[in-house]
Length: 325
Image 1 (cartoon, rainbow, N blue to C red):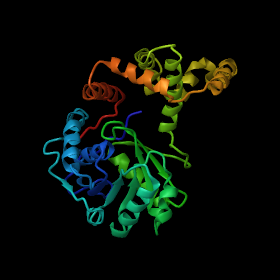
Image 2: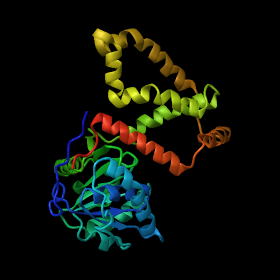
Image 3: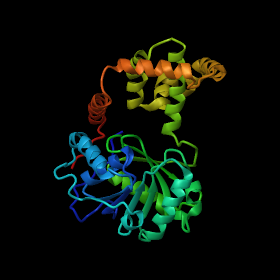
Image 4: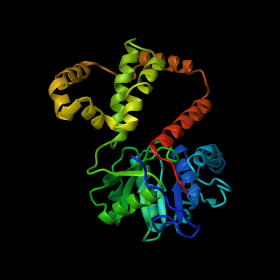
């Protein structure tokens, strides 16, 4: 399960032929990408027209630095190759790769990608971090739709290994492979999806599980903290090691998954049917209940995030998911 080990890289080598990256959008995802790109020796230009964007990005990068160092990356002078350019056309003119992280609105992405395609070098790799809009829909405004691919990270990108690489209907095989190779050499674990599906894979999985989480808490079966404890003490640990299919395969004993399905599948189907009948929604009572219980976590968002990152890094060390540079 270990990730590929990035080889030592001189400042001029780049990664998969990429040395200069333009990160479009300086929010949490964009800043996290920027931190990782910088820590891997790339030059990064962040393009975000919002006032205070540069200061916010620098703050996010500073917060990410300890985690990057714990993963084995050099964070000395981390912002030495960082630049800012609010004008999108100017920001992409020398880019080898563009990682777009704009708002999840198709009209906004259309506007941005028209500008990016018109001004980025013809050989630049073009990727969008969209969490649910298919590349096919975004690329309808492009003259060369074969150049665009989804490179969807799992938050935060500088820490969690997964990147879902999702080609659109007209994305070329060359673009898809180039994106996969870039993320892999970056030290990530890219997974190329075989077809487009709304929300991709990881978000659909967590949405399905979270639906049942909300139901159990709203019905008073457990509190939010108790449910979190159940997950982190059971399937969270198990799935980190084996994933759901392999876990159930092992759960079938010598007969494997076939035995599991024949003996326990009927019970699971009953639970699926029961869940389909249960109405789950973020109505006002549910919102109030969850919001009130969130106060019981007993720490600030920054403190909780720092604790999460420390534990995530420990898991990554155990699974061999860290960098060796």
